[in-house]
Amino acid sequence: MLIIGLDMGGTTTKGVLASESGILAKTVVVASDPLAAAAGAIGKLLADKGIQLDEVEAVALSGGRTKPLPDKILGLPVREVDEIEAVGRGGAYLAGMKECVVVSAGTGTAVVEVRIDGGRCEVRHLGGTAVGAGTLLGLGRLLLRRTSITSLMEMARKGNPKNVDLTVGDIVGGPVGRLDPDVTASNFGKVGDDVRPEDIAAGLVNMVGQVIGTVGLFAAKSVGLEESVVLVGGLMTHELLVNAAMKPFNLFGGSAIVPRDPQFATAIGASLKVLAMYTSPVGERYEA
Image 1 (cartoon, helix red, strand yellow):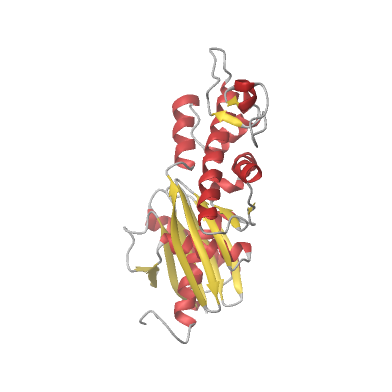
Image 2 (cartoon, rainbow, N blue to C red):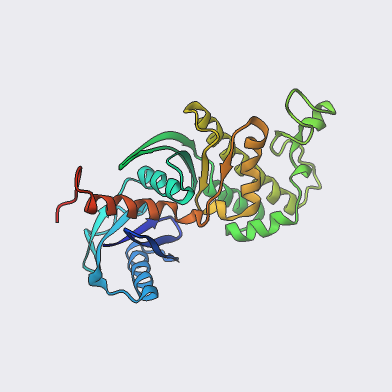
């Protein structure tokens, strides 16, 4: 059985082709119209694998732009999957974990607890933060006239966050308790009149990454899974952001990983949910 999973994001649509044997193909489509993006992703996935449309059972949809879409796309039935469940299932699948906390850094950031026992998958929304890619883009446009995450990251590589962030060492001249002198005490707490744009970009990446990591870590600690944290989402394809997100784990204990293809977690989770509903001999099933 073949299921197509789509994550309808604000600027991109991520798509996967899934079967009982695993994920067969992945693609990313950029289009402003949700229906055009969905149809484009479906067509690209099928063309890449040489599969006919009538070989696909259904399309699993998740993400922020699912509401305007019809009940069928290219004649295929559409099944909407709650984004939190899709994030949890997809993150756990990518990490190969049965118990974990998935931190999904998209426009904002969601934190999800996943526990899999046999054929049962329990997903619980722990919380999150409004800080994410939207924050990075908005501040990048406002402060630096950068219009994409990629261009902002390129600028940040040439900068140093220590030129704008106040560190523990700046304040007290040495360590405080378990805090090393290099630990950030205040994001953008050391901005002077001669600050460079590259340092501002580096400071933005550092701030957003640290907030995501800190929120994810302490949410995971609340359910005893701080050693099993999975970081996913489009932001986690950028090394600078990942490095910043890992700092709270290094500082306060815990362990986090970024699996391969983290940007496809939601699309994968949606496809797995629908695939299970069609193939499971018990429990909830979709009507034909």
